[in-house]
Amino acid sequence: MFVTRLACCLAAAAVCSSTCAAAEEEKTPEANAWERVDSLNKQSLQDFLKKFPDGKYAQEAKLGCSLQDKFVAIGDKKSKPAATIPFDVLGQRWQSWTKRNPDKGVIGYFAKKGEKFTSLGWFSPLTGGSTPGGNSVSFDGSGVMVSPTGDGSIIGFRTDGLKYEWLGGVVSQGSGDEPMFFGVLEGTGLVHLSGAGKVTLPDGKTFDLK
Image (cartoon, rainbow, N blue to C red):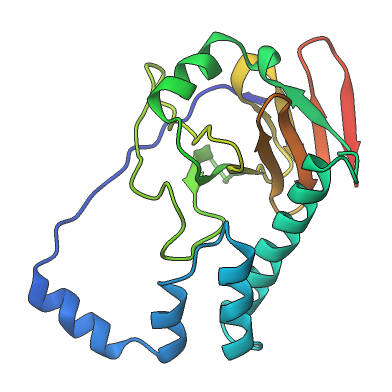
């Protein structure tokens, strides 16, 4: 079954300043430190890990460091990605997205099969509070959340084993609960950074990602 449309809406809630202040007081030192982390900046992640090497967010911080290392290695041509999705394959909608959200940021798309229906939507796979792009929320004409398209952006897919049709007929099929991560590499396309699964291009070419 191909997932061709995201059928979720984004809800926003306004919270008064006194409530925010009270919540801030209740946060742990680690949580307060995590709010200052830029998940797309390796140094920021490393600084956090020095203080909280075994904390609640340590595994996510290590993942962020690993993704940055892989992205830099691919950009410097010291490593070859297991899969590359060229920008031209993503079609006109991607070109439109580059105008709507040209910034660097992070987004994740998910599909999850339930007992009666499939849930579709988006999530934040890297949650450091100072990660860029968190406020750049918009939807295209098909109701799909527009991903950040700036160089260095990271896009995740968590599909619960389903075949998820994204832009230009590109189909991703993740393995298990762990997302597949791709980095936006200027002049190249989306390069695979980590995560197991399959990606199939419109011409039928399939990448089996370990």
